[in-house]
Length: 124
Image 1 (cartoon, rainbow, N blue to C red):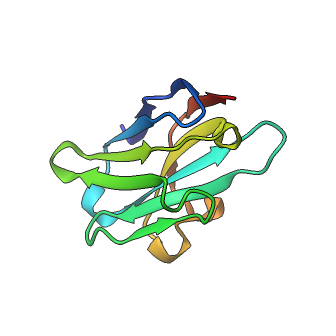
Image 2: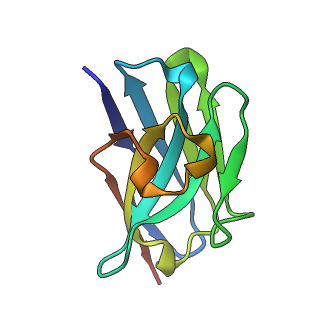
């Protein structure tokens, strides 16, 4: 079965850290770019970060640059998103997604596979 499963969400205070994980199965992991999106209540879904599995090329949205770090563990077919210096505006449901179109990895319409999401809440 083709799937992406997110984990690691939760409640954290401003300035805290969380590490999200995305476990992939059922498709050729190395051929894809894995992306993280987020959607806050009442807002559009936003591309946060992505990583090309074959070459480790990365992208970060300006809103998270310097605070979030994306990495892949190819042996475990897993992508992690380390989130430091969290702010209340980072509160959202975070989704993992996969695409073969790396150059469009921040565009939700380019995604082929989606996870169900994990909630991150940052309290002030």
